[in-house]
Image 1 (spheres, rainbow, N blue to C red):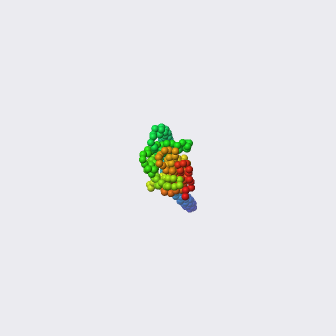
Image 2: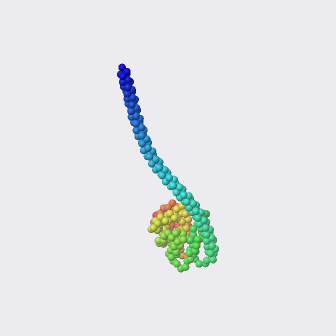
Image 3: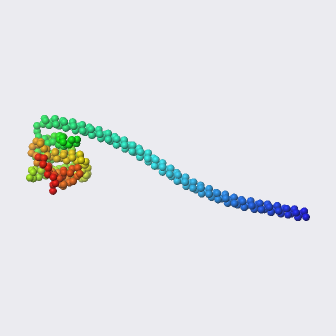
Length: 266
C-alpha cells in the first residue's frame, strides 16, 4: 500500500516537472521569437541610420560647397565694388583734367587767333553746358589748296582728333541752285559696323554735339577761309535720310553757309 502511494507521488512529481519544463520551453521559444523580432527591427533601424547618415553627410557637403561659393561670390562682389569705385574715381579725375585742359586750350587758341594773319580753317563745336558758345578747338593752316583739298584736310582732322579715326570722306561737291554743296559720307568701319552709332550718335547731348561739330566745322560760317563751299549735307554709309534718335536731321537736310536749312531730302 505504501509502495503504491510513493509511486503515485513520484508520478505526480514527474508530471508536474514535465509540465513546468514544457511551459518553460514554450516561454523560451516565445522569448527567442521576440528577441529575433527585436533584432530584425534593430537591423532595419541600423540600415535606416546608415542611409540617413549618408544623406546627412551629402547635405553637409552641399551646404559647405554653397557656403564656400557664397564666400567667393561675396569676395567677387566686394572686389567689383572696389573696382567700380576706383573706375568712378579715375573717370572723374580724367574728366576733370580733360575739362580743365580743354578750357586752357580754348583760351590759348583764342589768344593765338588774334596773332595769326594767314587764313586757317577751324574745327568748331558747341559747349556741352550752355550749347550756345562756339568753341575754337584748333587751327588748320591753309596755303594754296583747292576747295576739295581743304575739305579733305578738314575731314582728316575731324576724323583723327574728334571722332576716333572713324571713316568719313568727301563724296563729291554738287553744283546746285544754292551753290556748291559738299556731300560728306560718314560710314562705319568694317571691323565695327556700329561704331559711329554707338560712340557718337547716342544720347541727346552727345548726338547734338556730334551734329553741331560736323555742321559748324564744314560751314565755317563768318570766317575768312578763302574760296569755300556754300553748304553741306551728310550721308550715312552712302545713304541720305538715315534715321537716328539723337541726330534726327543730320542726314536729312542741306545746311547752307548763310544759315538756311532745307529739311526732308528725297
